[in-house]
Length: 326
Image (tube, rainbow, N blue to C red; front, top):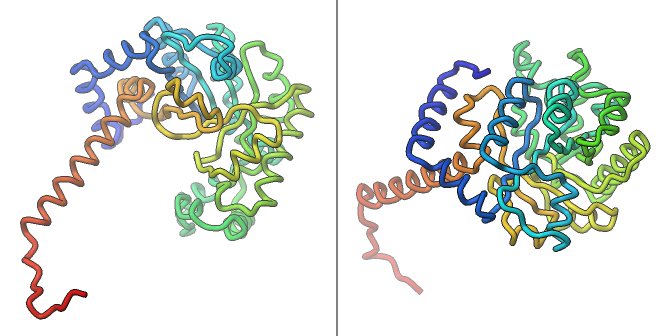
């Protein structure tokens, strides 16, 4: 259900305009012709949000692909599909079992859930302590700022607020991960152990995060873990190389675009389109088809261009009469 905020109301108005102008129809037409695969990811949607999304995608005539299907397509073992869509889910929130797995089974739709193992063991995600601290007016640093600093420093700040705040379980339990992994419609993938920003980690930390989470999930599920998503979408060539060495075969980013045949040339840089929980369904239709981010990029580009043009008109001429250029 849409949360009635100024941001969401404005988003709904823009989305309705984009739909009315035919942008969504055009994007769907390209997908159905096989120009690209729609790649949509969720975090912690309500059951209503997830079911509405699956029903809408089905109604458009799209065919749901598993991550194994995408791997086969990347290896040229099957043709690039017409009307393909892949659904992935990050983190492993406790409500995923009721809100996502149940719908995947009811509609017979393959879904990949990428699980961070430490939250499963401990119950919480590190950024939730700062969200709660904000509500309690404890003046925490912004989560976005914590994503920019070295991992050791971030861990110190997390520990500082863990001591001040108690949170209930947010992540699935080990038993839940084990249970949903038995579903023929669910694929479990890796999402690191503690959900750090990998590019801010040392080589040793990255190796531990990728290997430990893989081994832990394999122990819990009894299945090979071959697929991965980068926390926050951040990665470098170091992470790609290490994923290959550790036996992963595909990895997904947060680059907001559809998957083209060219993108499958590097299976460790696959883009995805984010569903925004709490936004209007009209906005999320635009998001799932790739129209939303493409439009925002164009608007930002136009705004920068206008700002540059305005500055060049209003700025005084540069005086250079006494400057000697060498």
